[in-house]
Length: 343
Picture 1 (cartoon, rainbow, N blue to C red):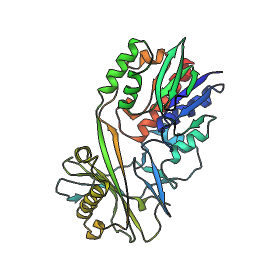
Picture 2: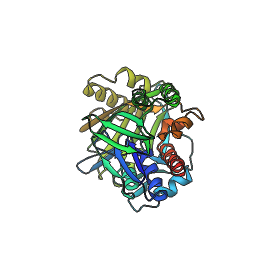
Picture 3: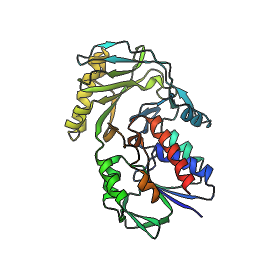
Picture 4: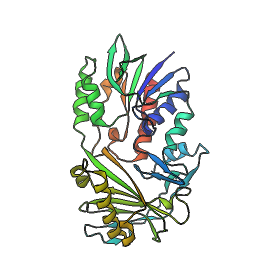
């Protein structure tokens, strides 16, 4: 039997596992995820009757293969209502560009994407299991977690963490190969934008024509504001929920500041941009910092070849350099096919 180990349970890993389960039916897939959830930054939380996506906002439909894939499952896929307008450094809102592409999510939130993909496989997922070491010997891989438990041996390993975390893991790996040094250096060359997110809940309906607002000049403290009530099934009638994501510079500067202070500042900004003073005093709040949110570049062509020859694969939006959920899914599909072919 072919044994495959997967580090991380993000969207790219889920897509790769889906391909491998279909194309290598004799494979046994073991997924080790450090957190208690699935789908990485495509993350969902619930509060009473409210559902909100507090990381990635939606799945774009500009990749036919990805859309065809998610459409295979009858699991509450819905279209986000409303356009995306823009605002500048002064907070002035104006109409955005018309776009034909749809914005997709799920009634139960974006986490459903990975749950559906993994659920269609026989992969075994171990949550709250942090991989701290990789080793390669006699043509196979073993993984060691934070509790000292060893997993494997595996014929191949797929790494899904962000580039800096993958680089750290490989830098300490017991794997004597030029490919390791090259991949570590390339992964460490990828810069990331941090994102600090405030979720703001209100006990009134907000009447605006748009779903989201994006800062186009990158000179405002806020980079993005979206309305979760525009997603079918997410917010009860008579309520509103804003997801406010700070810009990269603000997020980096204030990443470790007291969360309550950050939330208050972002609520004030949201009130000014949207043009409603009530938004400065939300009924409830939530928050999340994403230190490695948006990769600014991707791996150069060919840098993964040597690692893949040794059975080590990397997946994620950072591999392609496109910080979009659909890009991560597509990369997982493509990588899964390469691994299946190699096996």
